Length: 304
Ligand code: CP
Image: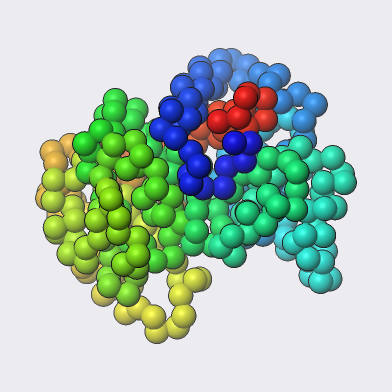
């Protein structure tokens, strides 16, 4: 494949190739001059129709570390406000000579549309609640770095699963790599259709975390909820907050992840987020190497 929209047509071997190249990219990033010429002469467009801190910046840095030119499409400063459509926007960027699109959009399926409108590789940087594949890749890479292999590991994801593209992409990817995934949250935020082989759903957070090798906390995506959809943040935190007391139920030394952005002391206690078992900063570091690897495989390798 030359695009990364989700993991529907990906294999464990292709994912392993991304991880192997990410290991090499870490070596590049450890050098005094952190730059390789792999994408020299190419132009990457980060087309962000929705806000982002780490995904946009790490993709831009990844492209620059590989010597690409980067153009940033910021929806708020664009001609979208004059009624220009997604299709015309992408065709305009195509005409300017963009070689690859990295797309974030609030609408589920938007990355597929961009891929249809452009003959160039498209990377989904998060579309609505549907998929965020590079986040899942960096999560899996971070876990693999700690465990060696994900085979037989229990990974629990607690929070607003309903609105989470991170949960959906991890529920696709982690079982492909041999892990089991337990999704947990209040019933209103836990869509039953996500249950399948390798993916278990429960509203019981104590059961979900019992014996887990790693626990990922997810933010409540209030921007995607209708008013009154959920009780108060205090009620949520009282039951579902990932904190030191809850982690007592996990395996000894179990790790804690969060894709960010975090709301400290709501879905995760600030003290746990700052503790040695939290991999949150390492997730961000690995995100840069993983995104360099994805760009390499899709743009100059033989595809993933
Ligand atoms: N994890 C993640 O996608 O963060 P941003 O929204 O800041 O990119």
